[in-house]
Image (cartoon, rainbow, N blue to C red; front, side, top):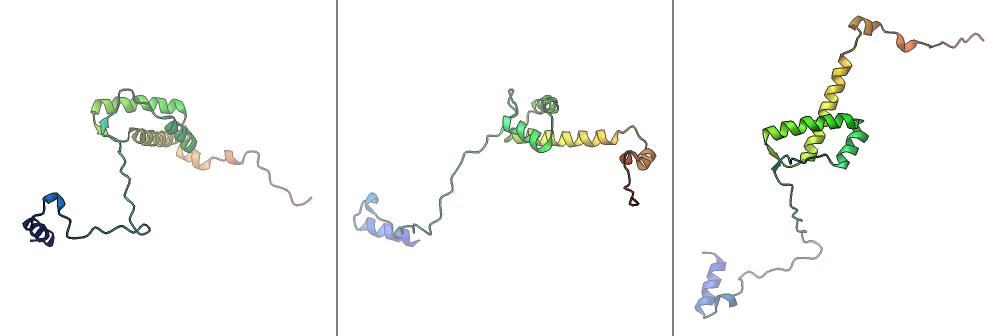
Length: 143
């Protein structure tokens, strides 16, 4: 039996009503400087399937253009694929805007690497390419 229980029983035996009984351990006042701040509880994003009317936010579009140089027409084609896929799976997620951003960045990098590999030059032509030195002139030091 804890001290708190013993204290309660003693006061009840002495005739005290339950709402009149004070705690055996005095409640200490928190120090105004050293007390721990209470965490702010925020309601997080709800887990839900992709909404039918999903569209990327203006901030996401601006981010993709400014930080990754992705054109709006590419983003628009990715939106169609993204919506078709996630509506078909029916999976529920929290952060659809972030999921879309990640999808577009991945597809953009994939697209860039694939178009870079599909060059019309053979490997030998790429290795012997001297187009970089066209118009290059050495300065003659015998002036």
